[in-house]
Image (cartoon, rainbow, N blue to C red; front, side, top):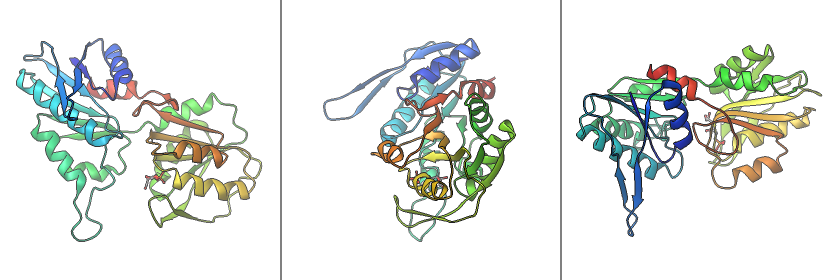
Length: 288
Ligand code: R5P
């Protein structure tokens, strides 16, 4: 197999190629003066299977378009099969029509990906598993939560309690808690606006305990900040955040620090300073 690194996932691509013992090709990316994107993947791929690894974090439209160009270029070079590895799948949260007239964004994204040449899609911790039903080609998601749980074991957490940020994160919190042998709960939330989230109070036994808030994505930080306030009022000792995808839009990082979060532990589905856990072994396994 040949691994082609997209510009948004350079380190992860190298690690996956290394684990697979596969050839790594760094594609060439340029921008024309008017902002258009240029891509060239110079590789001997004829009749060979190829994995293109490109995450679609912000700027998601640019990263997505680069992936589409790469898929098309590699298809024309004659690859026998192309797997699109999209560690963070953009637009996955708009996977259905919530109000009349809305675009089902993920459906459009899925069509573009398959029509550009992907035979299969691999992702990590997709927001909701059912969202993958929008793809007409095989699409699989693997969870990084057990890996995150193992990382948390190396921290000296005091009587930890694992809390899913909302009902959707209950399963994720359970997987993390299983690794730690810790108690777990989930919270109930309502989003008023993109940044304004209400968490319904729950009486949890968090007093003087370290709390790990678990979510798939931290974007604006609204969910986590709102939950942290409640947990601190209930006497939590330190609040940690564990997530697969550190989108951290705008000034989310500063807002999370101001809210008193002790540490953010995320994966390299998006390569950031907080990406302390690598999903490379998961991706390599799925590509085998
Ligand atoms: C929503 O259902 C997700 O699981 C996350 O809780 C959400 O996307 C986080 O977004 P934000 O950081 O903007 O609150």
